[in-house]
Length: 65
Image (cartoon, rainbow, N blue to C red):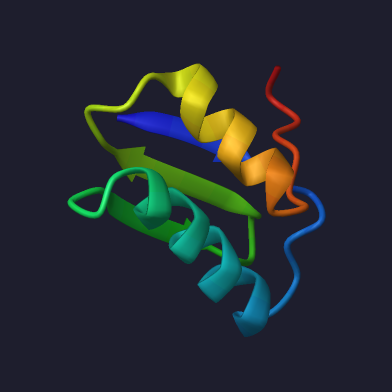
């Protein structure tokens, strides 16, 4: 399981965009979002770097490094 912190995520639309971005990379991915803590957990076979890049392209860079 991968964890990302997305400080720019602030609403339901953001959650939908983040979920769509991950699923565009891996349609079978499980995406769990905790909007209050701005945390996203992703279960996928895709590499972490690819998921992070897709999130950044969607406008949500990961602050965990």
